[in-house]
Image 1: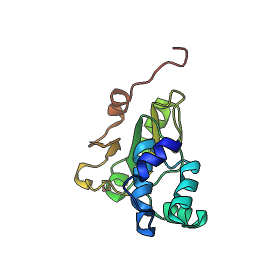
Image 2 (image 1 turned 135 degrees about the vertical axis):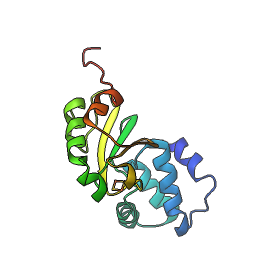
Image 3 (image 1 turned 60 degrees about the horizontal axis):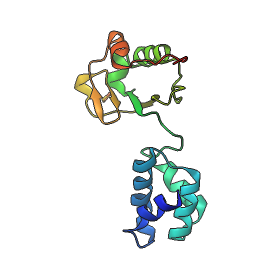
Length: 152
Ligand code: FES
């Protein structure tokens, strides 16, 4: 992680304004903000660990737990909610055997919900990594998310 951090901060001077871009770079490398990296950011920028953590938790874009290789964000905004977002989430939970906020045993999938993905006309929708999946039905859940067997 030390080398990774050095690579990330190469283009930064360690100024206060570097905080969010550095956190974004870390998240794009790891998929979340590892605690060890947050401490390094604090040392590099001179911003206290509690302030670094405070800024990171303020923005919903930052995550503090690892995600699966395929991170599923199901929209729970108004349009998606009235179009069955909760049933979609329950369907994914049943199909993958995880609850919202969890990750599958093989690290393939993680599941979260969000406020609005900005494509309300296509409700209900979800995002898998950067791909929008629209007009979702329970049938789609099985075909979109293939499961691996535990004893493989
Ligand atoms: S409410 Fe789901 S995309 Fe806007």
